Length: 165
Image 1 (cartoon, rainbow, N blue to C red):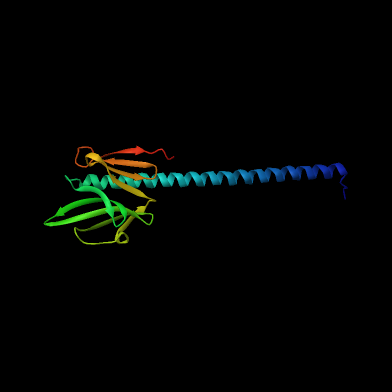
Image 2 (cartoon, rainbow, N blue to C red):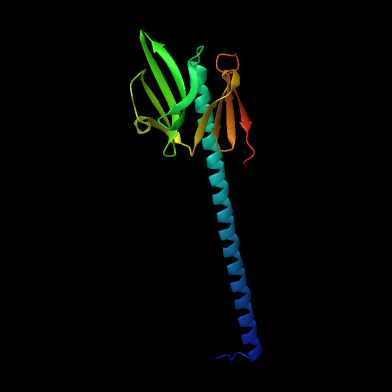
């Protein structure tokens, strides 16, 4: 049997300490990288949801835009965008609004009473606000982004980036 000298024991302990420091450093870097990746993914997902929701509204207005048919208003205490259409002799109203963290759409015959929870969820989005500006312009805001709609003016809308992020 070979006896280890005191110097060999110190070398072994020193190598083990360096290995442990290296292993802890690797674990810390991995944990930090995973946290940064998660945060970036969350921000990217939120921005994607905002852009998609605004594009959805823009497309709905573009496909249904007739003179005087698009308006912003209040739907039972919730900010909403209304699109009025006529099929045959019957008038219909589409309400687009956010409720319980989702973008909802409610298509109904004009004059019928519904509640915000009756709408069909389209996608998740934290909050979206619709406001009527002068000259018939409608501002749609979602998070740090906004969309200006110009119904029946030849231009359907422009996107703006807010100062939030």
